[in-house]
Amino acid sequence: MSKQSIVEAIKNYTKIIIHRHVRPDPDAYGSQVGLARMIQASFPGKQVFLTGEGEDSLNFLATMDEVPDEAYRGALVIICDTANQARIDDQRYNNGDLLIKIDHHPEVDTYGDIQWVDTSASSTSEMIYQLYEEFSSEGLVIKEDAARLLYAGIVGDTGRFLFPSTTERTLSYAAQLVNYKFDRSSLFNEMYKTPVHVAKLKGYVLQNFTVHEAGYSTVKLDKETLKQFNVTPSETSQLVGLLGDIEGILTWAFFVEEEETIRVRLRSKGPVINGVAANHNGGGHPMASGASASSWSETDQIAQELKEVCIQYKENKEQA
Ligand SMILES: [Mn+2]
Image (cartoon, rainbow, N blue to C red; front, side, top):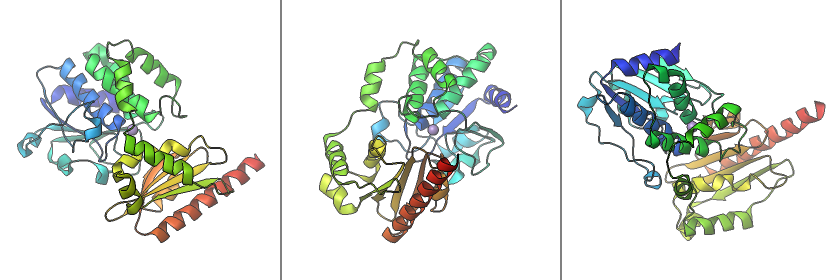
């Protein structure tokens, strides 16, 4: 059983290095650092390192450590919330003694000596809490700091408990987590504050989006537009949910021009879109995926594929 062997490994190693994916979100930080804080509270003698490039907008959750190369010698390495090896932040992950993967994304890349993948979990943070719940009798301890991080991860990945990935288990764990004394209001304020320039870009998107009759919408944010609003490509991640409550939109894509590529963020309220993502160097969840396009003509192709999944979805619904 993988959970049991994960707890055994944590007990057996004195040095533990925890990674997560590049371009981190609250669940990446929440699971990575929440796990670290849980290990530290449970086994105070162990050395626990957090690695990966720090993300300024998530500094309110935690900051990363400087991990020397030597630290990997004889270490247990745990990767949280990362489906494939290319997305692991800090590519030294193979330099340890034992590698563990803990993740809730559909399995695209099996890696690690021990893998625990649960696509029914709302978030990797939820899985970390589950580990605690099932093994608290074996000495696992959670304190306020871990509770705050895991709660942030669950809230982030479920869109504040809105997405269908939210289950009875999710809500039950959230209910237990809010019993810990952390400041929920200030956590929400930090997670959902919108910088003024990003708010202005939201206004631009809402003024300019179109809805195709098949049920899809695409938003193009090229370099000129980003410059006009003084918004960086990574700041646009806050915008992708914007079209989710608009009548007639089943699936939508944001095309954000970066230095070398066009980043593609895909969302859906029905049609499965991770196949489209997989066609364009990406992947992810059935209703939330990412990809990358090398040209604007490739984004036209992606729009065409979204149209097809919408049409297919509507046909299937009519037959059902
Ligand atoms: Mn996640």
